[in-house]
Image 1 (cartoon, one colour):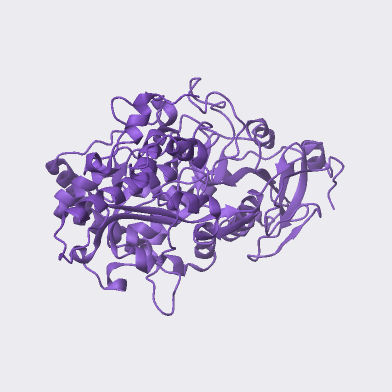
Image 2 (cartoon, rainbow, N blue to C red):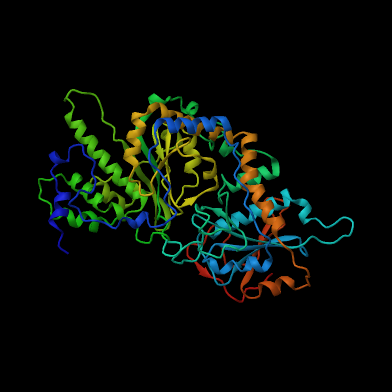
Length: 567
């Protein structure tokens, strides 16, 4: 294909013409389809910068109410049956289970569909089930205890659960905004999603966002249910607690001592590929290499490569968009550095420092410094690879961003960065985690559009409004510290764990009659049991099949054999 002169001109501007302007796609560049990250109708949240007095009013309302004091309204759940739970199956593609408490064995049993593949993410479903079984037994012992007077066994219970970075729902045009919501029948049985869920309740009305299937989330709630103890991940980091959160006092740096850059380190993942199948990682040859071949030698290759990446910006996943911003920030800093006197000791710091520290390579998480794909970009001035940073190192920076990964959020990053002494730029996407219900824009964070197009604007605002920016940062830190108290975690536990679990348990309508083979008759050939737990202890579970891996996800998906039977 012949590259247009306009695009070539946009890429080939000499260094002198680059100067300090932001490297945006100019008027002569090809017009792109900007629906990549704005197609979905539920992404119309207002993310404009409010007036100062509006932000101050938000602060006052927050102070008056007190952190965590505004309860999240409990989910209203209509009565449902075992048949209703099984009816949820067709709406999922994978990572979905039916949990059944069987009174005859006094065990909780996880069932998986014979028609679903056991994929890499299914270990999160197993983690969720194990925590759920133990928590149900711990929190509602009377529900699973025989009647003392009559000796009658308790009734059965059925729950629909799912897990994963992104819900394993089957694809339909509604999810990508081409058909009206809801995307599934509004009267489906509740689904406990232990992971990121849809931000809009109109997408999947009966889905409930639960703590994520991770040791510092659902496992902490399980621990609190059993022992009323706040796990160390929510406490301050110390020599005796190297897993805790990092606060200002941890590193001994005040606001004015922090490096004025937006920093991010993380892993290169895909991004909501079921919602945005056209978004991609860059291809060096297509996006840069083929264009550099046409550039005269006297042009700066780093500048040309950076401009080429800006041309591809709209097609890139958000974490790669942040790399584009970083490349532009480095080019700007290089130009400013040249303008300083030769004897100046000042070092111009780029305003953006967002790079990949790791990526999956041949099935193994690997530092990007060891992967040729990333190094090719680095050699041409595109800072795709960066050194890994501990929380203590990240805490030296004034601005942070929690750019979403495969499921549109970052499970650990948001909580960790709320505690850091810098300001959080929170990546607004169509997805949410349970914790997002407790953070308020312009009180605990500065919102950033899904395509990161306003990141530089928000950075400039924070630099020009240091007092407001610091106050937002302080609010976030205060919230993170509150979560580490028994009172604060109790509020979270009640709203995001005990209350929704109690609601689904109480809404279930048991069968009016159960014969010895009631369960086999109900699940027929659609489901098969794969694991059972007593729930009396945190790890009293056993696998019921030998063709899947429970503790670590199988590397490749595999189909269940329809002949599998309960053991």
